Image (cartoon, rainbow, N blue to C red; front, side, top):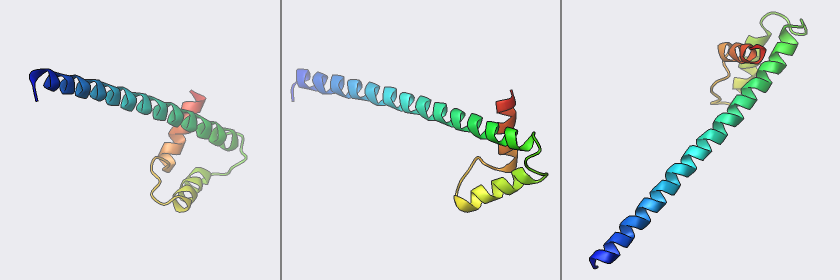
Length: 91
């Protein structure tokens, strides 16, 4: 392999690395955008039902437990997290 071939491979590797980094960054941005939308929607739903006295005391805890039972391994939907989502919506 001559020096020119080696430089072509180095350039190709750098171009591909940059594409991978850009793609990962874009994917992370999209995931974060979707999660924020989900948290806002959950917060709105919880706010509308808990603040308007549709749900009684302990409803958020029960909701959290039900979600975690229905989706084993689910993270981010503890009672405290759901209350934070409500606060996020209420802003």
